[in-house]
Length: 263
Image 1 (tube, rainbow, N blue to C red):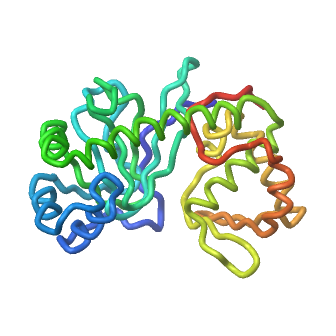
Image 2: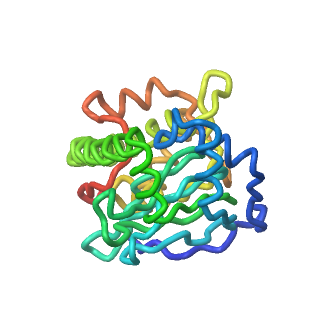
C-alpha cells in the first residue's frame, strides 16, 4: 500500500480556504461536546482565545510526531486523520465532521500527535492551545469531565476497530467501512445514501487494511451488481441492505486504527 502523501487540491474544487465568520464559530463552539452547557459569555471567551485558520483541500493541518500543543475543532468542511503503521504506510482512522475535535494535548494523553490531519475538503478550523484548554478545564469542571469522557471514547473506538478489522474478508471490511461512513456522513437520496466526499481508492484501502487493487475490484463488482454507484467525488450506496449483509453483524461501528491483513 502506498504511503499517504500531501495531495494537491483536486480539479474542480475550491482552492481558497473557507472563511470562519464569528457567528459560525460561536455556534460550533456552543454545540461542541467539550463546551456544551457553558454560558454565552464563556463561549465568547473561548472563541477569543482560539486561533482561526482556513485550509485548502489537501493541505496538512498537523503531522504525526510533532509536539501535541493544540486541540482542533472543525467549524466547516471535512478533515481526514491518518496514523502511521509499522510498514511505513498510513492508515485512515477517521473522517472529521463539523463540530468534532481532533488533534491532541497532554490532557488527552499525548506529548506528540499520533496521527496526521489533512483537509479532505476546503475547511475552517479553530485551534485551541494546551495552555488555554487547561485554563478552561480549571475554571469549568464539566469541561474536564468531557475531556476524560473523550479519552475513554477514543479507547473504546480503538477496541471496536480491532474487533471489526481483525478478521473477515476484504469485501466484509470494505462494506463495513462504507456503512460506517454512510452513518456518519451520508445524505439520504431516494432509497439510498449519498457520500458527497472526495474519498479515494487509497483512502478506502488504508481504512480497511487492503490494497487499492482489491478496493477497485470490489467496487467494480458492486457497481455491476447495482449495490453502489460512484462518481469522481462521490459514492452512493444504492442497496444498503445487501451491503449490510456482506459486512456481517460482527462488524461494529466506527473506523479506527487497527490494521487488518491485506487482501
